[in-house]
Length: 249
Ligand code: NI
Image 1 (cartoon, helix red, strand yellow):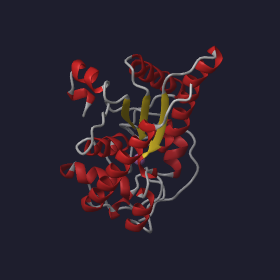
Image 2 (cartoon, helix red, strand yellow):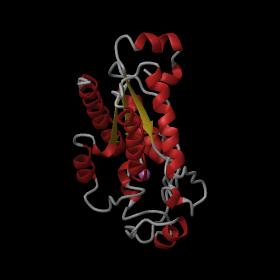
Image 3 (tube, protein in one colour):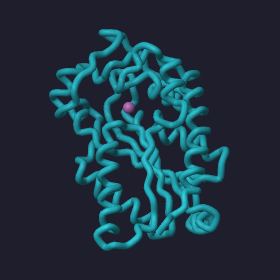
Image 4 (tube, helix red, strand yellow):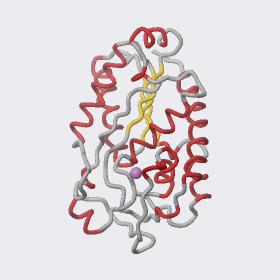
C-alpha cells in the first residue's frame, strides 16, 4: 500500500491492523556520467514499491533529498546540511507518530545519509530520555544493500569494479525500473579511483567523473531485476520482524 496513493480513511483503517510504515530515503546527487541523479532515492523506492505488491505493508512518500554536500561540485546535486536533515527527519517522524505509527522504518539508499539519520534518531530518543518518558515509537534504519543476502548477491554479480559510488548494482536497479533512461559512456579509467570524502571541490578533484571505485558499465537491467526481487523479499521479512518487536515500556 502506498501512502501517497491512499486517502486518510484508508490510512486510519491501516492503523487498525498495523502500526508500521516504511519511508524510502535517499539523495538527489551526481552518480557519475551515466548514473541518474535520483539513483539513491530511486533504489529504495523501487524495492519498497515492489515489496508492497506482495505484502500488506505501507510505504510512505520517498524522502528524496539527503546529505550530499560532498557531491555539490556536480550540477544537479541538491543537498541538505546535516542540521537541516536532522530537523526534517524529526518532523516527518513526529507527524507519523502523532497518528499512531509506532514502528518507523527508514529504508535508505545513500551511505552519506547514515550518520545524519542516526543522529536524528538520537535527537528523537533524547527528547524522551530527558523527560523520563517512554518514546512510544521505535525507529530503524536499513540500507537496501545491507538487507539479508543483497551484498552477497551484488558481489557475485560484480566481483570486480563494484566500488562505493555510482556502483553497478545501484545503476542496475534503476536500469530495471527505468529502461528508457539507460545511459552509456566511455569510462576512463574503467574502474574509477577511490579516496577520502571531504568538501565538494575536493571530491570533484579526486573523482573527476563522479564515480568512486566503480565500473557502472557492468550494470544490466536483468541484474537489477534480480537485486530488486531479492531485496523486496528480504525487506518484507525484516519489516515483519521489526513490527513484531514488543515495547518493554
Ligand atoms: Ni548511490
